[in-house]
Image (cartoon, rainbow, N blue to C red):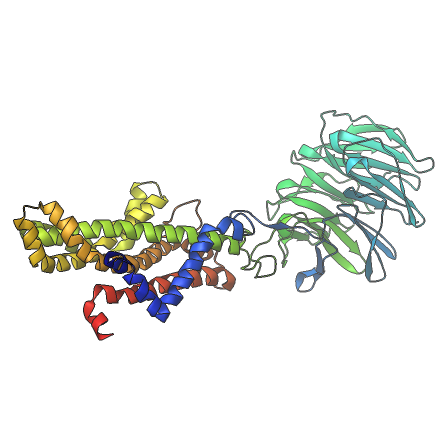
Length: 572
């Protein structure tokens, strides 16, 4: 048989189960609790992980700017070569694309290494170099693997004539390749400091110019078989080099480095750059018209006798090479790029934010902070408010006056400025957020409990306890407190919703705990990024979760009013 005390303990639960809205609130709140508890299992990734992607990005230059075209595969594109009627592109993981007419086709090659550089003659002979000493030679339609016995990366290649080519790579590797017998002749670098050599181009005098790390530049003279150092006027790393048929040249590199030579007899000069991001590829013609592309979708253009300017692009994908032919200009890439502002998809259910973080994962983890602050803050509010109300209502007189005037003063303190002062005085943390919520929200609870205690202290059972010699503490906590507990539970349920909204407000204002994920913090990031007006998938999920949690708590607290108010129960 169930005891009366046990029945009374389960009375609130019975009332909630009799209220349909309360049942809905219980179900929703239970689901949110499960979401918070099992967030590491539900979330597909770490909430702080930055999502990156890689593909064969293609940007075409049009009258409306550089427009993103359909990607060529799922790996980055590294270098291009072109002749009349044929274009070739090489990329990572052994990818080789060939275009004849207007169609790109992926061609099989007998290696899976990353392909870094390609050179093509007018007759159709082609050489490809890549990681792990990869060297491929095409004669006709077949690709032949040439053994180099090298484990390092070969970065670039240029034809010296129809039968010989110069190859450069890591650790100042310089190789002369003879296609007549497929022989490789190592050449000694005059620097010998282990620098990476990144690009090589044939100059109009028949020599080959090589550039690399820290502004290193060398000239190889095939007739004399000598290599000498050249000064280009910069100590920054150089990534690419292009020389036009008349000798106009362009070297580009890190921090927006642009070094140009006007004609074969001109001097190398460092051009003013419109952007300091790293450049990866450049191209220039005889008249001085040039293009330079690099990281984060940056494209620079130069008209003859003009300064370099930034071009309009619709992509932030990294660009590594330029293809210029009679059909137009293409900029190609891409290294791994951050998936910023991606709308909801099968991969990212709630999309991504400005840093490429998965918003579904962040929303799952954000429930933890909301519930922790909501219930822990509400518990502290109940402890403070209940005790203040008990003491003020029981002792009355000066004690009551002092405590209630304190409550009046607390009502005059605005919440946000008070929280801001706490954050400025102490290190921002989760504890400060809970403290800010607790120190200001207890005032209403204290008033309600005081009013109830003022009525209960005159009841016969309290007078009987006082006559029996019970102490004031015993009377307050063993006789009066159990009778105000229904009201305490009602206020607890209401305060949970208030605390959740308070935490979301503080986090939205940037006063929340750092290095933590909360729903308010997600909205704060959206506001700071400036994309909160357009990236609807960023604002909507945390807003809905906050609304659902607060409404669930409200529906539950609404059903508990019957416990706190017997008149309502009688009417029902």
